Amino acid sequence: MTEFEGIAPAIAQALAKRGYETLTPVQKAMLDPGLAGKDALVSAQTGSGKTVAFGLALAPGLLDGAERFGPAGAPLALAIAPTRELALQVQRELEWLYGLTGATIASCVGGMDMRTERRTLERGAHIVVGTPGRLCDHIRRNSLDISELRAVVLDEADEMLDLGFREDLEFILEAAPSERRTLMFSATVPRSIAKLAENYQRDAVRIATASEAKQHVDIEYRALTVVPSDRENAIINVLRYYEARNAIVFCSTRAAVNHLTARFNNRGFSVVALSGELSQNERTHALQAMRDGRARVCIATDVAARGIDLPGLELVIHADLPTNPETLLHRSGRTGRAGNKGVSAMIVPLSARRRTERLLEAARIRATWAKPPSADEVSQRDDERLLADPVFTAPPAEDEQSIVRQLLERHGAEQVAAAFLRQYRAGHSAPEELQDVPAEGERRKPRRDDFPVTPRDESAGRNDFTDGIWVSLSVGRKQNAEPRWLIPMLCRNGNLTKRDIGAIKMQPEETFVELSPESAERFLSAIGPDKTLERGIRVKPLAGAPDFQAKREGGFAKKKSFPEKGARSNDGPKPKWKSDRKPERAHAGEGGVSERSETKPWAKKPGKPNFAKKDGGPPAGKPNSRAKRKAARAQD
Image (cartoon, rainbow, N blue to C red):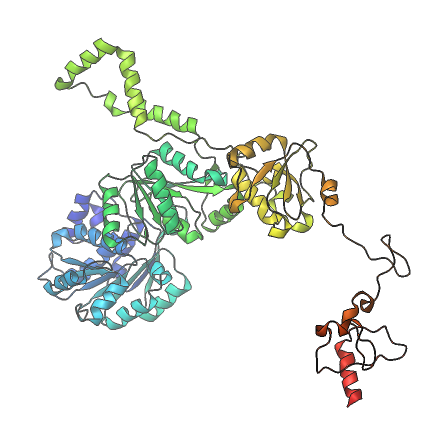
């Protein structure tokens, strides 16, 4: 029990009852006698036990030497969290930590009944946990009295600033007593957090645990490269391969959450969704379903899953790649908590390989690059789990022996085992067949076909196939077709790489694309029987190479060239002056009207002056603006 020296007996007993044998680095740091009563700015990686850490740090000041709290009145401590889920999670953690001290802990979070919260606050509470917006509402309505506060805790302070809660936080901190203790906990300490600490803390002690600067050793990072069209199939195989007790799949948008939730439900997974569009009641039920085992997969957005702690979470899947290192660390930190092991799997489309490498490098994470589990690997893993299932080690119970003998006598051991195997496999979703991708090793040197192709060099640098297969796309120059978006579309929809695409010949109404012989059949199979791509573009296989000469002679105008000075073109004499080609627009002379204008009243608008033709000048035609001005000045 040396780890718990200096902790209030009731809290030390709660830790032992919870199964704590040792404390994490951040928890030990908060128990440092030199930190007693001081403000602190603490940065530690996600899952390091920050909630228990500030619970231990607050206890001496709140109990003030007593073993138990007295009657509840105005709150003594205020804990602020960015989201409803995190605030309720902090409340649950503090309830078991302070359970033997008689503490009353109340919550004030958005989405809950404010009248119920007001009645709870009127009865009194020792600690209040809430979200910034709801706490501000209670303070402004005088239903939350913070005049007796001894400490304020900002949990996940960086996330609160990212979500736009700066004004609410400043309002709360300015309304709190000036002699309070302020503790800020944050995964990272950007300039905005440092500025907030400078304004609202007094001589704060900066604490950065040793584990902050290195990769989380309890998390295995895997980067799985896939063809873009296989992204969802790869997620299914990863879920099936690990069969984690709890798993979370991160998406970047609510629409993606809804799509994956519907698809995985259809595949037989027990799935819940967690996104900002859900009500508080729905989100609470979703998390409870994960905790009590009714659901095993949670599909969530980053904001909705901020700070949630699901017990036994063994697998994190990044369906959409994180946008920055902080998001990657936050997502991955949902697993590998409290000494448990976990896996963080990133689904990496081939085109996002370099971006993912830069992301991992910025986060200082070393990931294992590999392919997603294949259907055969998933089936093999299922067989291993079946053979190791503890159900085979338990002897038959008395009420089972009779039916066991009847089954063996009627069907035989082999048939019974086969029936059991079929029933076992029927309870699991079948794995998906994935398209093969190149083996990922060290970072390869860039090739020319890694770079976007512009219309100017649409054929340059492309593969020359002696026996290429040609297809026609129902889009051309008139539809603003360009190789820079045609090529990615073909690769995305047709299971192709840039090396499978040869020449691209664009016509006004269609585009001819040459494919390598070995990829043509794969392409046609991938686009399906209707042979339609994105934007309604239709694909038509050609029997041979298109006759481009026939296309030009069949109505596509040849580009004309201007003859050199003094030479005649092949099509006839040199072009005449405009006045010769369009006499209706010419002027007949000084004050005169052309012969054509007598029958065409719109050839000359009334009220406009006639311009005289100078001797030796060019043939009569439409004068330019400078000539008009000179003629006007001459008339004046």
